[in-house]
Image (cartoon, rainbow, N blue to C red):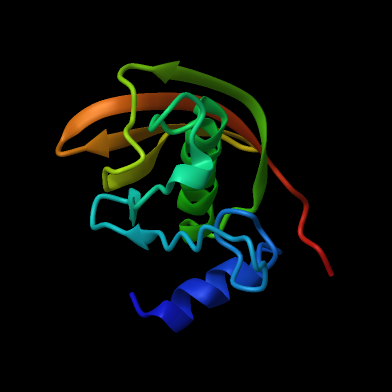
Length: 142
């Protein structure tokens, strides 16, 4: 998927100023989620030391936000605009601010207007954190 397509998905869903993916936010982490053949989405991310909690460890709140963003973008790629209603995060291993990570998300179940998703944050194919969440579909805007 081309960068312009990703920007369009973000813009269509009101995320151009998002802290994690918004191209019109000067503090954005500029995440770009790409769809896979299996319906999941994924993005690579290189943390920096401005995002640490403990020395050289990526802040847990940032990890939670990355996982939430992945699940949100998974829904965007399925043409669903929804908000997080419930989020459960499990921190498995500390994430170094020097590591490149992959964030991946997929849909577990749908009972519209409720969507259940799962996301993982991986470093070298090792799960560092994961989350499950419930999202509530938002009504279409005119």
